[in-house]
Image 1 (cartoon, rainbow, N blue to C red):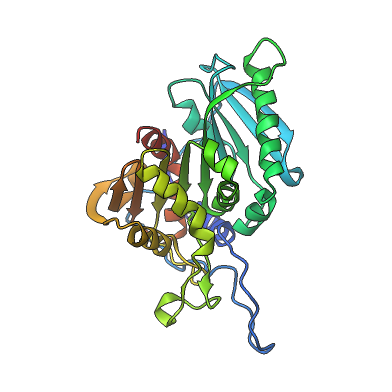
Image 2 (image 1 turned 180 degrees about the horizontal axis):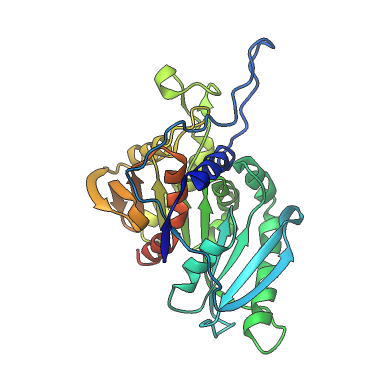
Length: 318
């Protein structure tokens, strides 16, 4: 069941979007010049697209919660259909409340579980936290114990056949940090980025139209993962809106960078996406897929998250 977002929800989403994908911007050289805002929230309001929302509901399964990175709760959801603790498929979702990722995993066939990690606004918080490889190792170990207790008949930790990382908005910062570690890069099977591939401008805050360029260094782990996906070694799906934050690079600009660097071609398309989304472009090579969607308002950003059930299935089918 889906619903349409109303005016009040739209205002709440607009506020949330201003917090969702911040990067740390350097202070101006002169004290008289204020630092750029973390993000210029989109002033756009539109009523053309449906912006359908998945209605929250009780999902059959087991929830277990523990204190994870930065002392924040990590929610582990094991759907009822999951039966084999020695061969689970793990999805780790970064940034946001559990229902949508829980629902997305509950719709998959097979022994899937999901762990939801939400730290704070801003990709830099996720990046700094997971820059220590031990944080991710500890997260995996604890999820394995909780999943084993939920599925198995003993307290033995669960074993994971595959690991898929999903980042919405600022959550991409955690995935970026995880992939920088070569051993973690090797064991991650798939990545889904939902309107969350960002970087800064060089010089800081100087947009491309004003002579700036993208800071390519934060994008390097994703470039390497994209190359592996093109070779068929990984699965990588990126979705993006047309939102222009202004103080850091948009997801359109970063995916344009990837497309050009990897020698790909954006194919213009016009088709419906999940929940009333309108797809405008596609770039594909091997198991790498980049999908561009219409919209530069706050609800368009949240549409990307609401589409996670469809996008996750699409990723795993690559």
